[in-house]
Image (cartoon, rainbow, N blue to C red; front, side, top):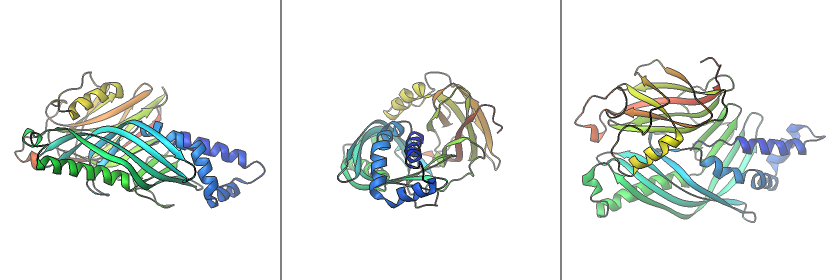
Length: 353
């Protein structure tokens, strides 16, 4: 899950500046890193309250393995937190919806609720802040509910033993996502999120080198879009009117469409598809659309958009965009899948690309 911890970083650094009056900043940094009590006090007072607001801004990628391609998304829609000072933990209560793709069943829409107790900590380095959420225990759930299954034969058996296996599989996916904890590495270039605990100076693996300059990196990952399906990248927040969304994409397979949609338009459309509505065009025309061609060269696109939150929908179907994938009788087993590595960044509108 890609979360922006800019408010957390600003608050922490602001407090450190106060603490560093008459003391060199490296000394304060060393004192903070050496004191678990001080780190907890800083985090619980200046950082814990930022977790849910930032969590609700981001979708979380779902993978079959820790280094696998993205095959689905989880979109948090509710979140609250409880701070336990005596145990030095933060419990996050969250819920949301999402989708994933499975062989034979096709697109599976789901909802999930869970409460997880994390031991939160951070480490201040010279060029980055590492924020860790180490799972202490799963307080509740995950309560996983199937919203829809694309293959209607499978869908009709969701309350049978096969349905139990489908739900159990989904629960294992979500359990794997929340039980491994997470690391957020915050640097001037943006936030990097990864499941599991990374120790400095390690960074999450990425398919692209990040861009030079001051652009903020939202996402840098590789996703699979199966024949007849879409992927929903984001949401990505453009905080200022003089900024643009910068996209870099490298595709293998057939051409696909990319559509930029405001979050207010995309969320209800995505939710309807996850609940079983047939795949079709969004309720409003995209702000911007372009075709991504396969090959070794990158597709680069700078999209000027007003301040707000946006999704980039990748369409590998014949129902939405201007290009259509070739028909393949083995599509339910994964044939016709395209693989796309991409980055999404926010930067000044007049930046060169």
